[in-house]
Image (tube, rainbow, N blue to C red; front, side, top):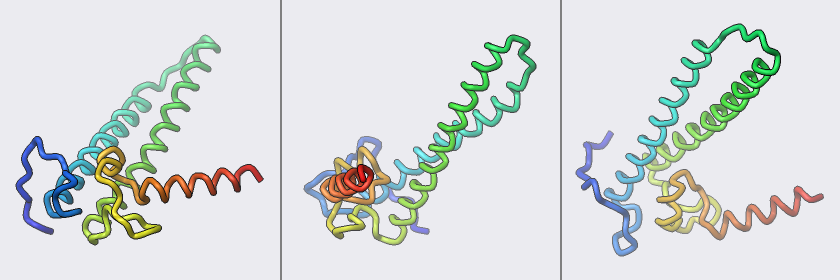
Length: 140
């Protein structure tokens, strides 16, 4: 593991610096770790809430409403679990020196796209092509 890099709190990756230099990689690594920690904390809160929230509700409508709320919460947590796996994958790509490059074209992914969605694995153009192909095949 590399020693902790100094990174100012107000640092934002800029187009005029070398692509995926140590500062940019550290910026994205920290961003991904904070995102993952937030998701994991939310999951712990949900588990605690579900364990504490088990109660006998006599009214059928209220019970159905609570079960629906729980189902929605569990579905949300499942999506977040999948997101944590994508974050872990992005962190692995940082360690392996592959982060920030499109898995289809090998070209750099724009810094704006990575800042908005640091788990992105494709450039905007490659992602749009992928989604168009997906839509065409889905319509069959």
